[in-house]
Amino acid sequence: MAPVAETRAQLRIGPIALPSPVVLAPMAGVTNVAFRTLCRELELARAGTVSGLYVCEMVTTRALVERHPATMHMVTFGPDESPRSLQLYSVDPQHTYAAAKMIVDEGLADHIDMNFGCPVPKVTRRGGGAALPYKRRLFGQIVRAAVSATENTDIPVTVKFRVGIDDEHHTFLDAGRIAAEEGAAAVALHARTAAQRYSGKANWEHIAVLKAHVTGIPVLGNGDIFEADDALAMMAATGCDGVVIGRGCLGRPWLFAELSAAFGGRPLPVAPTLGEVAEIVLRHGQLLAAHFGEDKGMRDMRKHIAWYLHGFPAGAELRRALALVKTVTELEDLLGQLDATVPFPDAAQGPRGRQGSSASVALPEGWLADPDDCTVPAGAEVMHSGG
Image 1 (cartoon, rainbow, N blue to C red):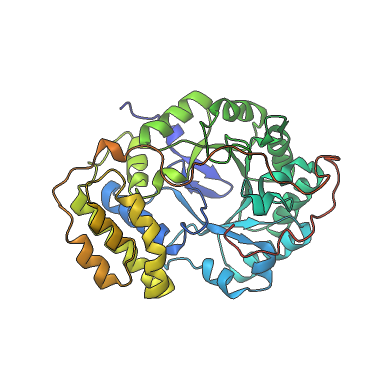
Image 2: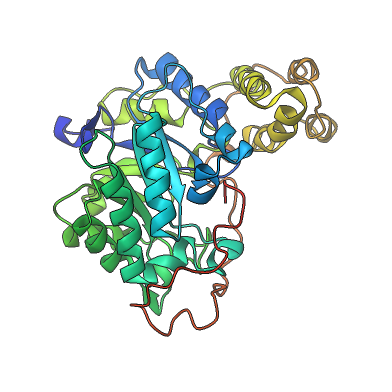
């Protein structure tokens, strides 16, 4: 693998300088403090550094301002986690300003990312997530509210969005331009439409077009990065300033160590054996139990186990037992039954997590009638944080 030029191996988001141009995408039910801690530990252990940006799960602005207990628990950061990155979901400029001001006043985070990319029907049918950039004036007002609340601070605001609602309604060029004009420090594009959800292939060409269109701030690319080579290929093909990693790290939290090495021009760490993966799974379970308590932590761990063991020979009976694990001790005992000598399999490469198929996007009635309508969607924030 050819080394990456030093100037391309760094990323600056406002005042935040990152040694590596790599960002962990916020993922509901995944990127809590336990998972972020694990990713950082593995990057440090396997690459000798912590160099990227690790973003927490999405939280709604209204729930944050109202101090919803589950939301306040979600914005937990590790004692040595820096920079602390928090993603907000909003459809309302007033709630956005109040939430961003709360983050500033209470020192809750060092970076704010705005979510305009969620394709989940319960979000888009109320005008949120990937549906909202179609309302370009409202979109601009929300970005401006977050930026104005963080003025004269060291907290940059970034914006993440998709290509558009569907192939007939692309919004990413307007979204990138408006976000830059309203003071965003960077933008990130998931190179799929909301209609695609997570299916098919991401169209990296759109990232290149956005990079040519938005020249004053960094443009990050997201979509179909499952290996370090994918990240290098995206940056080479599009000229983007950084990469955002989502499903590629599910069951592979050591991917960030590989990315750190790749962007630093160093050899990639050797892929872990099944025994080493088992140690990582146990550590993940311990961290989840510490964050949620053992019962909820182990219930949350079950989905991760399936991702971790993807492609490995584990046996149907052991997989079933792991899918019902209830305690950390039980988890450790079951993991001890795996063959620790099995090397990392080629079958474990590629996509994990959500894929599904494309579908029409659920939208509020009359949503497409007037892109300049600034009416705040009714009821779009009446949901728990995390998407």
